[in-house]
Image 1 (cartoon, helix red, strand yellow):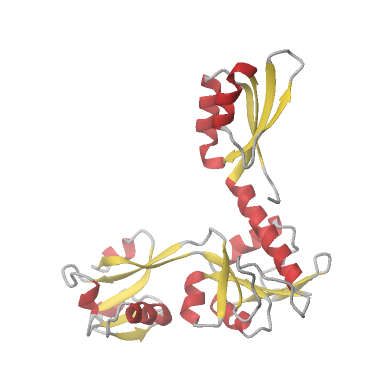
Image 2 (tube, rainbow, N blue to C red):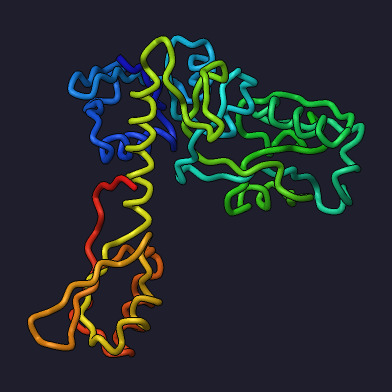
Length: 294
């Protein structure tokens, strides 16, 4: 049975549960549940603190996990990202008092307060910068005001909390994070990064799990578009809706007309419908895709 770690709370928890549900897996009904079994899919889910998931997965006691890229890197755990999931996005920046730093090199000799010591220490080492890192659990904006540090490193969304604290972002982002699927680094991989069959027999189930999540990602990104158009406009229409391999084209009862079906990016659907209408296509409609395999 496949053993999967899922965030039990925070910004990762809800979207992860929704994605797993869309992928056909049973999920917990109450937040106090820490473990459930999905016998139909031969999966056992463990609901853990997001910061701990990489450690559990790296230990090999759990086969796969969902956590943040930031938490994976910060943990230093022997696990690796295998699939980005597109939610819980965040960006990490350095921030300090206005006019204090001119660039990354000016961090040398400074004390930096952060809740993500592993990320910051790694970033400084990658750039050859010798600075001190102080670990704080949350509310790092006050560290400068209280004299604990000259610089902070934290997640920045709108920047409002930084401005309220009299701080400004300096330099390029340290990293960009989002929810990711992780595997133990020791697990055998193919050159393409997909788990291969191993002695424990779990890898086919891991591949199936990844295919299901990839199917959800595609289903969320695309819609199915159907429309009718005259044969003489078909090439222009197909250029607008090429689909993934090629659109499906079927003759209609009325001579000179065809029906076309193709997957199109959801974000571009309205523009494509306008363009199709302009070249004479009619009966244009879109439908949501709930699941797929490509």
